[in-house]
Amino acid sequence: METKGIQQFMNSYSVKMIIVSVLAILLLIPSFLIMNIIQERIALSEKVKNELYAQWGGKQVVAGPVLNVPFSVLEMGENSQMADKRNGVAHFLPETLKTVGILYPQTRKRGIYKVVVYESKLRLTGSFTQPDVLKLDIQNARFNWDAAYFTIGVSDMRGIKNLPELIVNGQKCIVEPGVADTDLFQSGITIKAGLVELDQPFNFEIELELNGSEDLSVEALGKTSEVTMKSDWAHPGFTGGFLPESRNVSNNGFTANWSVTHLNRNFPQQWVGGKFKTHESKLGVELLIPVDHYQKTMRSVKYAILFIALNFIIFIFIELKSKARIHPFQYSLVAFALLIFYVLLTSIGEQTGFNVAYLVSAVAVTLLISWYAFSILRNKRMVAWVTLLQTGLYLFLFTLLQLHDYALLAGSIGLFVILAILMRASQQIKWYSEE
Image (tube, rainbow, N blue to C red; front, side):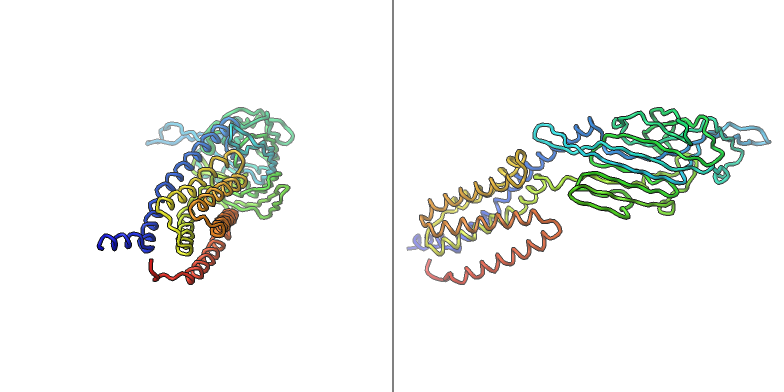
């Protein structure tokens, strides 16, 4: 008699619910393993992307031109004796700087991976005023105007595709690779001032053709700087310390305009040495890739416990309603089918993209669970409910993954509706009837 009572207790629905709940929690372990698989694929994807970027050209930052004038100072020692000579470089920023950049994006592939790179054409025009060395407040300085030179910072020299020419007041100046000093830029080009008359205002212009990837930025170094960026890429992201004053983004591309003055930054128009860094004046555009399948798959895995719990609740309700007996092992197989969905989504998504992969994976798992439910329940009506509810859950998840700003709102409303449906369904079950 005691053995029969223990058996009835173990077969009770209350114990079944406890066992199934513990099982659902334990199934979080394989869901974490699946997340690790996705992270490994993401890491491999990033590695391939970085290799392609390195071969084509990385993120490009263009800065300048800056006029640089070497000088020396003879410092007097004790007893009016001459001390060692101190050398330095004075840097002068342009009075006006206008930059027009056009980006031509391209898609490059290696195996199953795709990246977006770009070719760009930049035209920099502007003017300098006569350098005012008195503002530098350097005593006994001798400026070597014959050795003056311009520098233009280019972050990735591998991306330069043309032989640029700096034209100053109609006069072409010789361009050399590298920067003569690293006070401002770590890499770039140097242009000797040559016969440029620096004792009066002068205009300049230069055109650069650059290969790059992901991001193109310029530094607003003029006392007044105007920047225009154009491209036929429909998904731009604006980066740096300044947002564009005006922008037009459509499916045909974008146009963005910036206007920055020297009052918007924390460095002057002229200084000596590496006292100031100009990176804070950077602004630009990033060629965004719409949320890729890895990101969406990773987001979907975070809903795994919700899917498992809801499916277990569905089968428990069906078990209570139909009086069929479903073993905890069979619950486990259903849960593993739900987890296989994310593996299918990742692997198929690498070949077809997210939407097609989601459709194929969802249909495959729904059919598998429906077939298995029919083998257990032998009730077409109940199996139809399983199929319908499973389809509804996958549609709900797909909707959440497509939303960005309203994902939380849609998710909370959806969960509220699901909870209301479960409450209504639970009212039709006699929980304290004989089990």
